[in-house]
Image 1 (cartoon, rainbow, N blue to C red):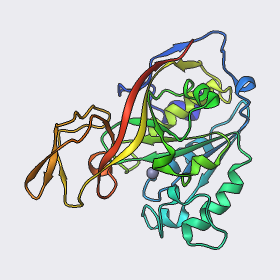
Image 2 (cartoon, protein in one colour):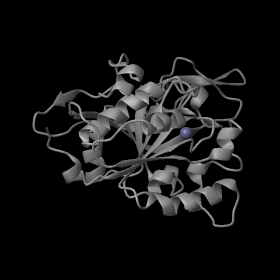
Image 3 (cartoon, rainbow, N blue to C red):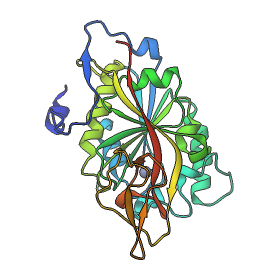
Image 4 (cartoon, rainbow, N blue to C red):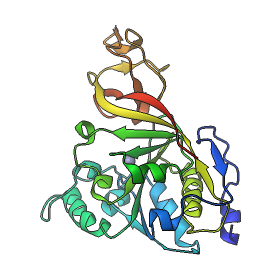
Length: 290
Ligand SMILES: [Zn+2]
């Protein structure tokens, strides 16, 4: 670690959700194998999530051993107004339009720009009560290789039906979202820096001890639990904790409601989308080969 980092970076992770790691004296995955030379970090795809800006500022001042990192603030106008978006959600606006509203134009221009990077990290924060998760829109060999290099255990696969093709990472050669909770204030940015720092070390961009994270939990999102806008969810429900069919999930005008299905909820509580209880996922546990 360089002098800048030892000052700014919390050395030990204190939250218990990262994947089990192991160190290897002879790394199996490195820049040569993954062929990642140019990385782009996207911040503020949602303008009220300043975490990405903080992450970009940090890596701006880090001297690399290898490769290049470019930071891009996606929705500057929304960031200036501290709003999620100006006209529509940018992360639902891809591939965008050359002559469209604020987000459509951003999407159109970004999509072309992002093609030249080997890896895109799109940084988000949520008001839902979980520490971190990696969000992907497809699961192929390269994504699997990449997941192994990141100290985040929970992986959320958004099926096409849910994200359609509107998401930013969908339009990159290799892209993931990193999501940090449990608030949007940006206070959790150090965890994002820590995870990305380890990823960069594993990719030989930075000097340090390589660590691989072979245990993951895969949550496949294939539906959304829709509720009336006046629905009041049961506060006992937790993100990534199984909700059983018939379980009490909340009230609508004092009438008790019970779950229609077994599922793992994601984005509950303050982080939920309007008129939804949560995204609905199933869960698989996974251990990569060492
Ligand atoms: Zn976001």
